[in-house]
Image (cartoon, one colour):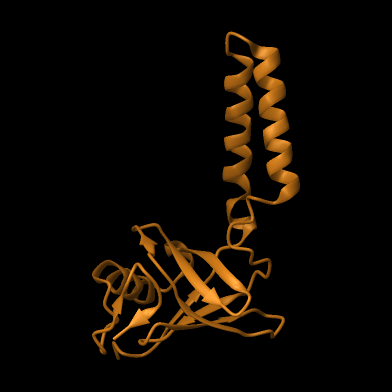
Length: 155
């Protein structure tokens, strides 16, 4: 396997988190109802949940297409390829965050900064493992480029 080839990853969408968000909302409402002031806290919780739902602040990654693919190259460049065909070019920007189960990638594109969520269960095992190694060591595999927290990939 070539370690200097680009990574191809599937981006998580809102649908991947819909059940988790609904359970979280139910727990918030349940705790508000069981509180010492149930009416006031239930109204406040319902107002905050409704506002968040309507304003789509939960659309963290702002990727609606189910088949969006992210390609990360060894020099820090990225390419977002949705199924609709509008390819977006950019680069890794700032501090990335990764765990065994998911990674949050900060991508700088021409129209701003995007935070993309990559779930490990949706990826090929080797691809996700390579992504974790790149992000945890802050080094892209073959070119010794550092991912600086101040900005873009620099040599």
